[in-house]
Image (spheres, rainbow, N blue to C red):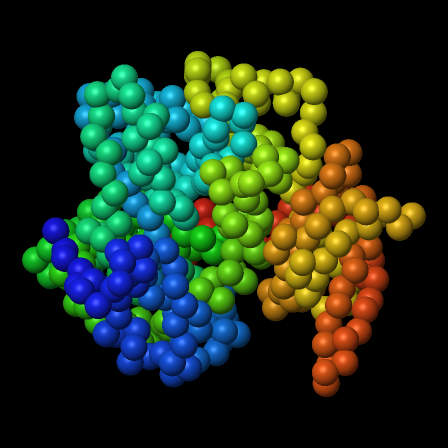
Length: 401
């Protein structure tokens, strides 16, 4: 197990760990700015958010995933436990596969979302935004399971973009092109085990690499050597945020308030209110929040998370959404000017019954130019499809860009 020196921290909760890739990140971080993601130092942008975004869409962007919170679930009742905890039917997730899911409190409100890795029979890893060990342990009563947070024991890199598969082949991962979306496999790489999953947070062709922290620097070096002629570039969290908005992926604490953090329960959201009703499998039996979600399905939801196509070129971050008659309809949760869609786009939480595709609204945008604040009411409309969803995302084998 990797140990972390926290002797200079006043308290363990204030410790900020350097990533296993920190030495390599530090060399590339021209802006010399660092942010905190969970318990780790993270890079907002290495030198240019726009160029890093462009690498993720047109070549290969590499993002340090190590700070993502990871929990290992094992034991005879691991499957039964996860099926009780999650809204989706985990029984359908076979070994060697990855599945997206959410988990709720007893009121059917989302605590967090994340991915479930079925590593092998009876062994699962849950990756999420928030620390969940207390909640997971509380819900383990009566189940023969072992739950361990192994965030510090696994280093990870997201390798995303059209040249990502070609880069991994050049790195020596023979057969990587045969890995299907949401599949995972292991390689013997430079004398150590490297796990690769065809997953990501960009809505594009991409992979995530998982390795023991002791081998992190070697993995980084080999990856960037292999990707040099294919436009590989380190990518910070700001660029990743742009990529995920384009493909309609939600972010805890931004697009919804995790139920465990809410002071006012009315400010939380259910899976249906986040557009994730397809993850609620009532036919699998009892799971956390099932009764409340059944009642919501019968009576209707309070909100709907939608995608907005907005006129003009001003990002509508934190804007209010109004009907054509000037009545409040909801709030923008994430927004950007999309270079790929050539449009101002946003995710927004609208009050029921608003949110049907094609429905038109106005967003109230404030922007600053030369210390002067300006206000514009920009027309917008709800769209059904995400703004970025290329065929290469699903193609197996991917084209050799």
